[in-house]
Amino acid sequence: MHTIINNIFSVTTETFSDIADDIFQFQYNNNKVFRNWCDLIRKNQHLKVNNQKGLIAKQDLGFLPYFIPISFFKSETVVSTTYEPQAVFESSGTTQTINSKHLVKDLDIYKSSFLNAFDLFYGELKDWCIIGLLPSYLERNNSSLIVMVDELIRGSGHPESGFYLNNYSALKDVLLKLEEKGQKTLLIGVTFALLDFVEQFPLQLTHTTIMETGGMKGRRKELTREEVHHIITNGLGVKKVHSEYGMTELLSQAYSLGDGRFICPPWMKVLVRDEDDPLTIRTHGKGILNIIDLANIYSCSFIATDDMGIVFEDGSFEVIGRLDNSDIRGCSLMVL
Image 1: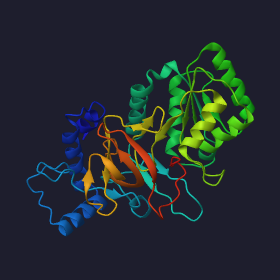
Image 2: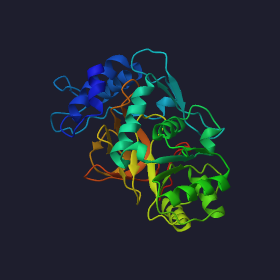
Image 3: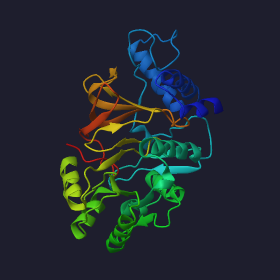
Image 4: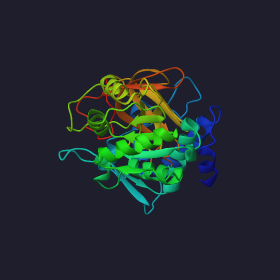
């Protein structure tokens, strides 16, 4: 497995399928939940895959439909091999929902995923000051987002990097201080807190990038992504608002650098399944999003989400809604 792990973050378009196949075989052999799901699909669909290496079909079937429903993380222990987890990530939700739990065997894999992705999308971490405005996540335990932002804060090494709860006045002062110095700053904020901050302290920021992570959860009136970004761009003077697409059940994230279109790092791929025929998987089009996350090697790398979206031919995607009756997720993005 060390060889596969070492190859994940150097994967190319040409090698993605081979590594995905290797991980598929590993998880099929070592993940009871995944194996049972695959066997059930094979039996019901009469799929003949004996001559195929695994997930990626070599004939005319396209992508074979081995993606576990994301709801399994609420009811099952989704692990590949048996281990004592270094962390247990838990989704946010309401008091009426059952939260997902992701048992993480090796936090270093998660850190490698988001640090490599940051370098890919934003450049050298040490060039940035990282500020987290994530009050709802700091107020609870087991948030994967807090682990990521905390590591980015420490990795930046900047004296002004840090978390803010509800002290918006102090946040305004530090942003103005950083602006005066021309310091590249990334403000990562939950949506409702960013909107609260904008209302109280409108600014004109030149050197600051705003990234919203989604999340209203009854804190404010629900708004579309376009409405949220319009308020933030007008209130803070930035040209675009960046976004993160991640979730408790994954160890990788996709990023939008504006306009709501997300781009995956090379070790993550988003596909689309038909709502009427969920075992039909396509590389692009409109439907419900399926994700291959190669970094999720000790859990499950093949997940069928509840997010509706459009996947474009270049692999980028937009989120346009959620399936009816799916749970509210605190980290979900504003949708059309």
